[in-house]
Image (tube, rainbow, N blue to C red; front, side):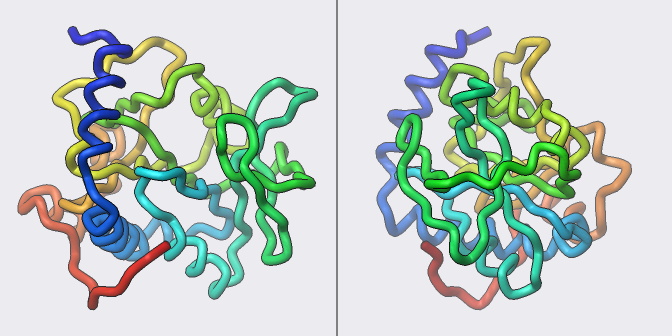
Length: 217
């Protein structure tokens, strides 16, 4: 099996070759499909990420949360705990690049004890069993294993070019319940029993539900 370091190098190069136009269009399709998921409609507390260059955008999801009154959280580094923890992202929250250039609140309002319903997760690579390859360091795995996010429905966001035949995984790696790309949404096998008719169609025909166009962040 290919080593994680080798796969990271391959996926970084592959992602770097994708231009901003492709990324915007793919991000739009991905977000529109997520907005149709029953887990999204039922979620009241959502943890998502603010995209770094090259990552699928999440601005449409953030806007949908604001419009519907959902609570929004994002990962932020807590120096005292020496790990990332969920912090509230309110409309008046000031954000700046933090550790590793990851956008996070200037004055985090930690929410480690809240039960989050749904979490949107970035990654360098995913496979169709829900395994995820991050940037290294295990920060997201520790975040996802924490009390607030442990029971959340976990959706990985990626471009189809980031899908690998098999992602190497270790015992501490946290798998996704579903993965969304511009080509569709599929659920990991352990979530197959909760699949909806729309998602079955996505999986069989490899096409995401189409929206009316538009751009995201």
